Length: 414
Image 1 (cartoon, rainbow, N blue to C red):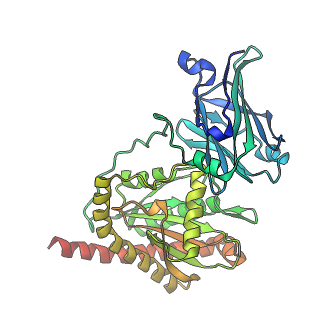
Image 2: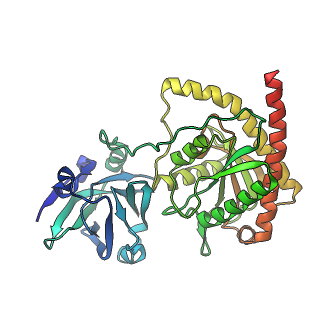
């Protein structure tokens, strides 16, 4: 048996970057392995966790950790996880693993995420290959409890050179002058794929927002005011940075991110429109932004901290021009919802540091259509007639804003 074996003591905090069984060097591995759900196991062992993940053949892989909550991240190039039964695997570790997700993270890459009840680090990692004389492989991971300081140090450890996931290859489209031709609107149904977003009573934020985005797209096209591009057309995962890149590629005039969150208290209700703010307008907004971005980090890459000095200055200049337009867009949407007698949150205009709102040159807002933790909001979100009214209000808000924005652009050109 050929085997690639790496053992790391938790205190050492080593990021593992491994080619499976030497196959990479020989150029013989296939680009897609399949997980064997029946032969894979997850169980508690010696105060920690043990994972055996059976694969059809070896692929390059790595292990890393994220915090808040503690998560084990295993990246592959690449694995089809459809045969993996997450509920069965978690059955033996109830309370120790609070969530398990697996799926594609972007083209050519797959990810397995285990949310842990406490900090743990790798004590042993091994991929056994050429099993039973064939192409099969078995990834063996053993975790042991770790103190918070050691875990935090491991989370903060930078990626090894050459590992960072490739940036999406997208060339920005030239943007037409303001006020000329129909708006280019990018609709961003939040979450998707292995990130379902908020869940309540059998409904997921990802599915509800995809349904609404499709209906809003149709309403915008029928109104004749916009060409619409969607960041996802199905239940697939799209990283945060890719959502913004899609908007740039499309030459977007407006970026609308659509969400319907849940709050533990279950008392929040009504729609809210968010614009970008370095400091959240209140504690609830800060928590919401952290939750949205943290969920995406379970399977994607955040944009925070990526600006260098020069790029930062240029982006700040663009934001100074875009920010007032964005504020007016948010005000127009809230006014149109109020005119349509749609329920609004008691504070319908807020600010938060959502990553998807950070395009400096595109007016971008995040619309929380409601809270699926509220029975009334969930009933509305599930009602086609209510969704049609909300879509009509957003169309009206965009239309009135575009007229005002075009007039302002005309004054600037004079």
